[in-house]
Every structure is written in structure tokens, then in C-alpha cells.
Image 1: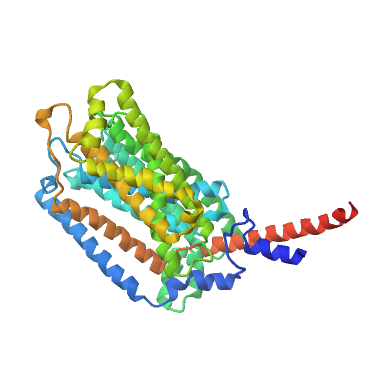
Image 2 (image 1 turned 90 degrees about the vertical axis):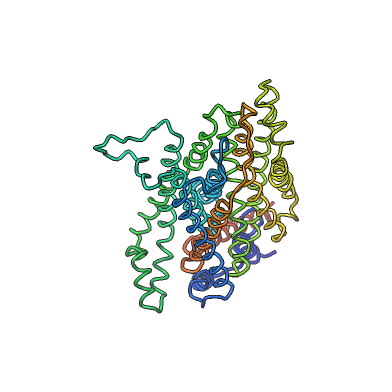
Length: 479
């Protein structure tokens, strides 16, 4: 093979372990046209249909919240002893989904992983929209949400200082910090593309709107220098948050004395589960969008394969957490702990939900050991949906089955969700989908500036490899 042919092959294959992270040799103009197409093209009928469905579900969400405010928490199916139910289940589930975005954007950026380039903006947007859903629940769960500001340590003449021993306060601080850093990180990364949209817009209104949000970006060397410093600083701030936020959420349960909650495995086990469900949601959203918008050239099989491997690894961590919980319940000799794990969950009235959790979170991800399964996008999409279902049932099992049969049999009770509970759950899914559809329509879902930079890096590596091969050829002839 000639040096020139070797150079072309290395470039087209991405020079990363022989697998492509960018297909072909698109120039900057081609990348702009392809990646900005969803923003410039006319609104599709499919998008409008999905927008209508998600808008209706969003209306259902806020109607159910208004009904809750009017009637009180009694509108839900909560009772004694199941005082926590769908509100906390949904809160923990949505917070977990929001973890993959920060992991992909911040940690993979710090480790200089090139395969993050085409998927980071999908994940960052998903993080923000998931955290918005999660933030709804602690405020509703207060019972008197109009006093939510009591949770913040603002200078108060009435001395209504927050109780720092309350896990609810820990959640507020952790989630609000996570949302703020994630929002800044996402917005800073958008600036070069917003400026490109501003310059390419044919509509005056679009130029003004994108120009305002681009903050005067001109692409000068000074702007790029400040951009990279800010991006790295935010990545450094966001990295510990990946581990801390869901650890703090797990403390809501671990600091209690309730069997099924009081366990030290919860912090790492919750973090692994959060990354597990977060990557599953990224795949659930990305695979259809990749097909509809024709992004196969920039979101290649390598991206899907790597995300599937991360799902497999974190799924094994979650499975280890299940095994550890069960072993400790047996080894401890605590009859209450043993009753929760060996009777209430596995053989109790909620046993079908427990075994659904085991099937979706333990058995289904094992398919991903096979390369052909990871290369089958339809199968991978189905696996990602099942993982999301499994992680929701996991939260249900942890919360409801630990509460509905506590120490005293005389206080046992079944939990049955009402139409308000189901409306809020389906409404948050609709609200999340609505925000994501708006993101796809008005913001480039793949970072054009970062893909262009990746292309130049690949060209440089290909030329360097070709030059090294050319220098090595005379030495080989001499030998």
C-alpha cells in the first residue's frame, strides 16, 4: 500500500484503534450544512406530532400539580407508613438520568477522549432537562411549596434558618449546584455554534436572537483562549459533582434506621446506577435522532459501541450492589433486614416489580457482551428502554417495599398510586420530551465547532503517521 493510500485510510477510519469517530473527509462548509440542517429546515410533521403529544402531557403535569396544591398531598396514594412514594421515586430516577451528561462532557473531556465530541451536547441537554424534572419534586413534597425559600440560608430577620441536619436540605444544595454548573457548562460550549448560526441566519429576528445569546463571540484568538480556560474550569468543577450529587441523594435513605435503607453500599451503588440509567437515556434519545437527521457520519458505530460498553460496566456494578445488599442482609443476622430482602421484596405483594427490576437491570444488559448486539441499533435501543424501566422499578423497590412493611405488622399497609401519581409521572416524561424537541429544533444538537476541531486533529495524526512511514521506508530498504 502506498503512503498516500495509507494516509487516506487512516484519516477516514479515524486513526483511533481502527474504528471511526468521523466518517469521510467533510470540510467545514459540509459540516455546517449537515449539523445545522435541523435548525434551518422546515418543521417536519413528525416533529409537530411529537410536540403536540408532549405538550399535552406537559399540560397534564401542571394540571396534576395544581390539583395537588388545591387538595393537598392526600391527592396522592401516599399513606402511613408509605409516606414517600412516586414523588421521591421520580426525583431519584430523574436525578440519575441527569448524570451521563456531566460524565460524557466533563470527565471524558479531561481524559481527552475523542469519541465524546459528537455526543456531548445531546448528553448535556438531557442532563439539564432531567434535572428540571427532578427539581419539581422536592418543592412539591414540602407540602407548603410557597415557603420553598426557607430552604436557603438567606439573611432572615425572622431567624428562620434552614435545618442543616435535614436530608431535604442536602438535596436542595446538591441538585441546585449541579444544575447551575451543568447549565453554565452547556451554555459555554454552545457559544461558537450560536455565533455561527447568527452569521449564517437569513432572518433578521434569528440574527438578533442568536446574536444576543452568542454574547458577541467573534472567534478571535482571545475569545478562544478564554473559552478553553472557562470550559476546562467548569469541567473540573463538574467532575466531582458526578460522584457527590447522587451520593448525597443516597444519604436520604442511608442515614435512616429503616431496614432496606440503612446500608453503606448506597453511595457507590447509587452513583453507578445513575450513570447506568443516564447512558441508557442518552441512547434512547440519540439513536432515533441520529437516524432522522442523518448523523451517522458524525455519531458513528464507535460512539454507540462505547456507550454500550459503559452501560455494561455500570450494569455489572449495579448487579454487584444487589448481590452485596442481599449477602449483608443474610450475614448480619438481623431478622428485620432479612425479612425485607428475602420475604417482602422477593416474595411479597410487590414481587413482580422486584423481578422486573432484576430482569431489566441484571439480565438484559448481559446481551451487550456480544459485539453483534452492540452493533444492532434497534436491539441497543430496546435494551436502553428496558434499562430505564428497570431503574425506575429499582427506585420503587427501594422506597415502597422498605416502607410498606416496617417493624410492626399492625402498621403494614399497601401503596396504590392514584391518577394524580400517574399523571405527574407521565407528565414529567412529556415535559422532558417537550424540552428535548425544542432543543433539537432551535439549537445544533451536535457541536459543529468541536467536530471541526476533531477533523483537524485526525488530519494531523494521519499526516504525522504518513510522514513517519515515509521516513521509515528507506531504513527498511537499508536493512
